[in-house]
Length: 327
Image 1 (cartoon, rainbow, N blue to C red):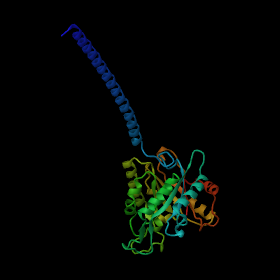
Image 2 (image 1 turned 90 degrees about the vertical axis):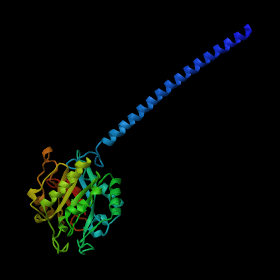
Image 3 (image 1 turned 90 degrees about the horizontal axis):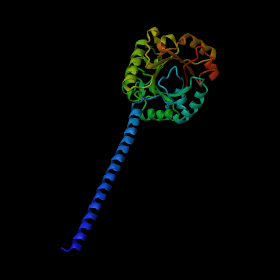
Image 4 (image 1 turned 45 degrees about the vertical axis):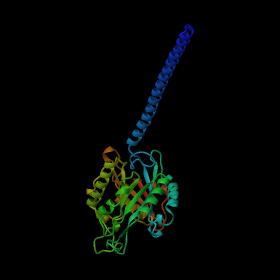
């Protein structure tokens, strides 16, 4: 090998060593960049996952915020069922139209520090004079009907209240059938003892009743659902227009998970309605030790009332109702 050839080979090997060093350096730089990028992505994903986990862990709230229905809000409801206009305002229009009108009416009951919360009160178990296939004189609404009313309520950031008229069935049995809905944070419950009658008695032929023990059984069931699913407080409306409709009222149990409302349900002239409300309403009690109620409700009838009371008239009642229901 000549001296020139050896020199060329040495230069070539030197160039290759330099080239390899540059390649290794470039690979190292690239590897570091990849590691840094992966770390950044991991941090970002981790941050988002942490945020998502935090959001997932946050307990559900009511449609318009907060975890307490009462006394944080004043609930204003439209009542009825789609089967017949005679059953209430929810039978006169579509649930979507009823919800839009309700939202306007509810706003008239808002006051500083106490916003109005609209609700559609759907008769989900409807008492019947006919016995039906099971002989229990009641009809359950279809899932499609309940879901449609729930969508309408959600469109205005309101509640859906499922009203139970058991006929000859049992209140707790009808309530338990509604559990798939009651486990949702914006679905609540109402009990209508007028339509709770013993075997052999046709609903509507007499004024039915229920005992405080049954109300307590239902409220305990609702409280368990709230605790199990970490839900906001549940609203429990008990309709009443005579003393005998809810027996042993002094034995009603209150639970912080359930805002129990005794709703004055009779129709007539304003003086007559005020008289019944004065007799059946509870004194206003506020504070952590009174959470759960019982609270006061007042019902207005578009058709049956003589001289429909205005929101101002209703709010002038003492104590002012916590829940106002329009039928």
